[in-house]
Each structure stands twice: as C-alpha cells, then as structure tokens.
Image 1: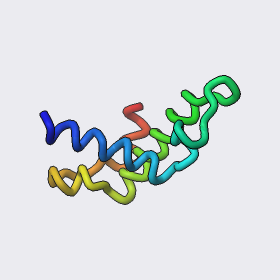
Image 2: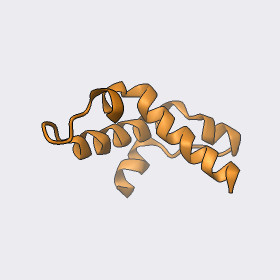
Image 3: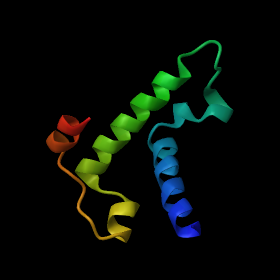
Length: 75
C-alpha cells in the first residue's frame, strides 16, 4: 500500500509544484475564494500538462499518457 500512496502523493505534489496558489496552507481562504474551483482547474491543467510532458508516474510505470484530445474527450 505504501507504493500506491507514494504515487498518489506525486500527483498532489505536481499540482502544488505547477500551481502554487492552490497550496491551501499558504494562500487560500475558504470563505473568501472559490477554493474548490481553483483546485479542480489546477487538476485539469495538470492533467493536460501530463498529457503533453509526461510525469514521474508515467515514467515509473512505463506507460504513455493519452493525447490531450483523447483526455479532453473522455472528461
């Protein structure tokens, strides 16, 4: 279970690395900003970034990410 948890944490880390403004502890105020929408958009943009550039997870498991067009058609 530890290896699976580590891969999931890589995904959260990539979101924070690419979009630092969604780091709740530092920047977000849940009563003044649409925090959920910001995080959902950051996740969407991170997934598109992964489709274009790959990620640590795709290289670790030796899989190709889908194309951006395939990803957007499936969402």
